[in-house]
Image (cartoon, rainbow, N blue to C red):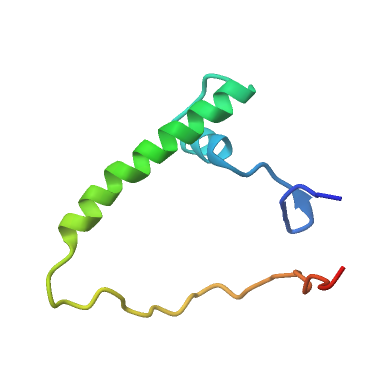
Length: 84
């Protein structure tokens, strides 16, 4: 049985529509059509940002720097059963 996404034991909405709603980027509704529209708008938003990210790359420069997280994981995930 599938369960909704949980954080600190509470169910929360996730997905493109929820992200765009929280950011204020989409407030037209919550129908299936709205979810599809939010996915399309979020995809365009990411594609536009990718063009800037690509232009920020410098040939020969490092592309990754490790920065330790200041947050500790509170994961309650358990390994999935296999072979069933």
